[in-house]
Structures are given as structure tokens and as C-alpha cells.
Image: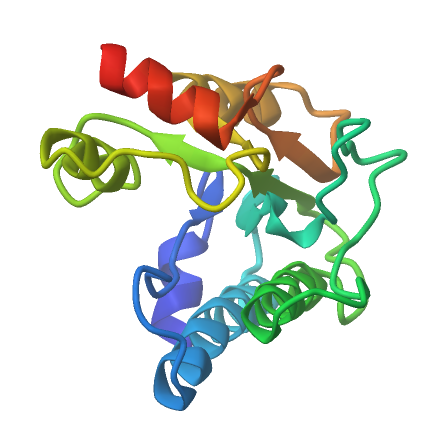
Length: 203
């Protein structure tokens, strides 16, 4: 851990985006790796920051907007949003994702606050960009194969953010030194799945 502390000494910012992909079947091993990759990376950075004499002034930690419940009548935000997982009809994979989201963000603040480092938790929606292997490549690939119809009822909202806007949000959170805590990074008007896929087919 000492070499991590050396790397962070006098750094301008630390941004942790490390985690295992969730683009897999949720078997026992994958679930363990999904959870541990997020929580353990947070704890490793925290321990390194505690060892630095001159820590970075801000730590931006990736997290997920999946923590929220899925209402159809109002958007979730950090002030009035409803944390999900307690819905009586929620499938186990859904509850698992929310449990991971809680543990991920909770690992940042599970100990005493870092006295000289501002903590920012970035609860991001799906980051859409054109790169192969990214989130956007999955629905795009389905559309190109003629399989890009709605999922289920198609009423569920698709929350997302463009990769450029994500980068702009990161810069905004770094530059504004009075900001700390959890922030939601997403486009302001998500589309229902059916409409999202229809627009993608048209494009």
C-alpha cells in the first residue's frame, strides 16, 4: 500500500473508476467479483490516502445510479430519490445490484472522513460512447442484427449520460471546491426503453 500512497502524494486529484464489468451472468463467482472489485478498490485508495502526508484535495469515486428505485411518475434525485431494493416484486438480480451500489458508496464513508480530502461520489447512469465494448455497443449491436425491439413492456426508463458530458461533469466536480457528497450524473430526460430503441433503430 505504501507505493500507492507514494503515487498519490501531492496529486491534484484521485479518480477511481475501477470495477469489474456487470456485463455477465450473475452467478455466484461473478457476483462476488462484482462486489469485491468495487468495495476493495475503494478501501485500497482510502488506506493509501490515509498514509499520504500531502493528499490530493479531492477524491472522485465512481458509483451507480442503479441504487434508486424505478418509479414511473417522478425522477429520482439526491434529495428526494427513493433507494430501491425493497420492492416486493424486485428480482434477486435487481436487489443484488442495489446492495452493491450501497456497499460501493458506503465504503467511501465507512470510516472517519478524510480531513484534507474532499469526497465526491459520482452516481452515474450508463455512460454512452461509440467505443467497442462500451455500454452503447450492446443495444447498437442488437439493432444491427434486427433484434432491437423493446425489452419487456418497454415502459422502463433508460437513464444514460454521453461520455463527453460525463467528462465535463468530472471537471465540474473537480473545479468546484465547495461540492462534496453524492451527485447524480445523467441526462435530464431519460426515455422509456421502447422509445429509446425506436430512436436507435431510426438512427
